[in-house]
Length: 136
Image (cartoon, rainbow, N blue to C red; front, side, top):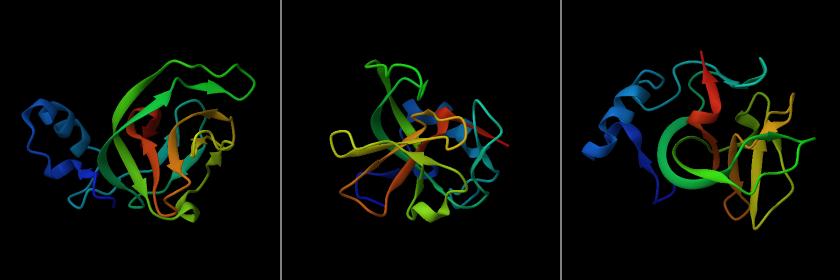
């Protein structure tokens, strides 16, 4: 895990308390995903249980769209991500072309995204936004 990442379950910031309580339902005592993680738009499995660590890392992601739609320049800054250190850990994920040293992660089946991101400068850090996937 990079120095700027904060494990969510160890956060003591009271402004993030309600978010942390919500996130404990999807992560185990070690901060790993309790359940499978799926695409929001199709039944595609993105990650199997216990494969990613929940971290707090602020990052701006463009609004979600399908590959056939025009990319939106608008987006939102998210802070809760599933961190994976090896791209082979994913069950089903696609990567965009590199944009400003970032590859955006998309669903490999329906091509909706971005659901996460990866910096080309860090070969051991892949992030899936908690709010951009289903847990179950």
